[in-house]
Length: 492
Ligand code: MN
Image (cartoon, rainbow, N blue to C red; front, side, top):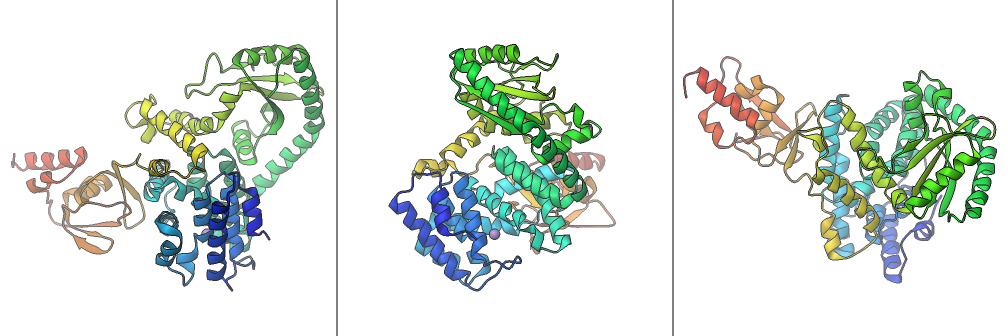
């Protein structure tokens, strides 16, 4: 059981009286609204609101976002309306709460195909409209995952799958590495119990075995470095997260002996020159493994990642990876995680929005990831201009619509149902007669909106494209199909 004091105490922001009063007032409203409600775990519902808020506080979110986190399930699950929230807490918080409610209604299930999932993630971000809404949703999901045990197995499976396929990749893209790791490990536990337990066992054994060596090495390195007058900003032991360890194990025939970065030490120093000095000292002290010295400082990864990695023989002959980097490089580590996404996606053959046409990362898209990274740091601030910048406009030229089966179709702005029909299948486009959006008939030149469920009614006996359609279709695929048909029919 946690209390509102835990939320306030754990906030990374400097708490002034105005902020604190806001959070307490949101808490009071949520408490009264959810009174008598229980979670499946048997806990009072308010515990879920508090945990969501606590997760947001941990992430360094501002008082408005924390307040919206406290209120996030109020309009959906209680008698208190969104209008009342707006009246008491203003439009900004009300909008966030509304955004979270709307996102909660999207069905995030379906095909396993990566392209489809990618569209689902994009649509999720596009529909959130405000980056803070996504972050609240992640904080909410984290607590739902932590309490997943109380749900029936089918639900556990579905929610864990959704978490792994949609939420963790989004956390990753936003550079919230901690959140990504937590969500993945929790989902892993429910989706693949056997391998989870196996990986957890291996990891615990290794950690236990390595711990005393790491402690000794940290102490030794600290001493050596200080003798050489190298300032160490941070030095600490680290170990690989379970899900990512398992992914790596799978790649190496489950042979733990082939994984060299299972445990390691990270050293953070002020200047680039100190990184090389530190490398020299590390190698003087511990023998490096040939072929495992990676200088990503002079040769950054294609995504810009910078650090020196070296694998050394530790005191007991085990391998340990040592990472050396500057503070700035480490500050970009979270951005690096987002960049890592770009990098690892790039190796796959499918196109995603970072690589729409070419394999090269467009400058603009990198800037986008950087921007997200900066937002992460700035999220505590309250000023107007900044709030404006939180609006998610990077998908502003994209519309996401659903087929009745729940497939996500990515369309350009102002696209028509005919564009949608051709995107689904050329036959459906050619035979389109009329369209329904969210169950209601709409004209064929209707402008599709984000989140619309579109149904295309087709003719069975003949093809139907009309010259008229060229007036309003937006995709080149639709245009070329229509023209092709007309040419064949001698209409052009
Ligand atoms: Mn919730």
